[in-house]
Length: 430
Image (cartoon, rainbow, N blue to C red; front, side):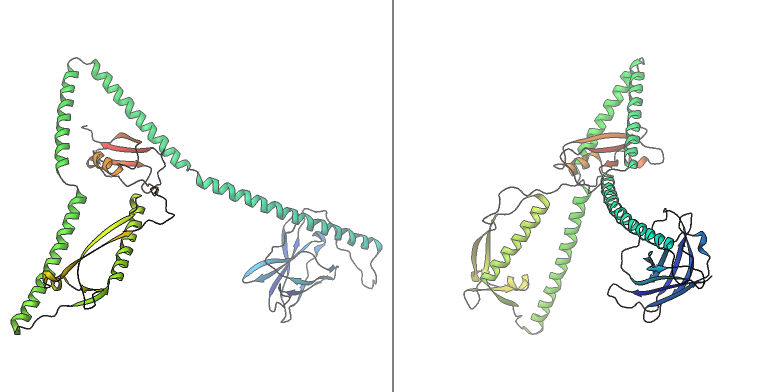
């Protein structure tokens, strides 16, 4: 027997949902759902579908789904009226809230109305009332479950945040593996010391070798201290390149000026412009303020006062000053035209505290450094530094004497109690 399914689809603003795909499902006795009818609404939102499925083996619970924005959403699971011939959902308004359904209820059958019947029996009426009460109970249970779901989701997010703040198991295993390796190396050193102490005549020879190596180490350290660092050399190279570039520009300018003078004895005009003295003081104050802010960010200090001495040339208006475009123009001004301007700048605010600005310290990158260079890098960063040695393989002999591992990693914020662990690679001959 065919069953007609009816509904009127509207959005949350009570406007008709035209040409919208819809599907109806029956809940099976096992708790699943099965598709029994499909259709599409009219331009006025009316929906009409036909199901030829015999649902005597299904629960009298149905689920209407509607496709919105290419996504299937649950529309309703409670028909207004239903019988063997017609299931009418009435007007269904759709929103973003999903429809929760339960399938673990007592089995019921949809009342069968025979052809020619006019009224429903009293027993069927009681069943309908019972089903309405059960639907109301299911609605209340759905709200309760929704609240429990929200509570569980909040608890899950809290646990997830706590889990992310903790170190991973891989990090802990790496530390444990490193500790095991260091203990093994220490034990190997102890065994070798014990063996050497028991040997006849070997201890003196080894002591002499150790003393010789210590002398060689000290000589190398003195030589290293005499030599500049790579960073210093690069800075000097940059200064040389900059000065060479300036010298080349000066030579070009001299050639231009000499060409003008030799060509016709034409006087070269001095390029300048006037600037008000108060604008000069204001721009100087702004520059010192920016420098103070940068100094506070990098080193934790701040400039409170500054004194400025300037040699100036007065303009036609004695309150204005002349600003020259190039040093060549300035060099052509007679010395008796210069005057002195001195002013003080106070950057201390009335409510500013005299306490030093606290700057967050971070772990620098020292991997590949020697111990001496690393100690320079860490000077003033952290006092608690632990040094360890690790035997290098024959495939990597060039890392001897260099830091091959550091903890914590670079750019990690340092707390007062943070332990810095540095591991230096040693070769087979050390």
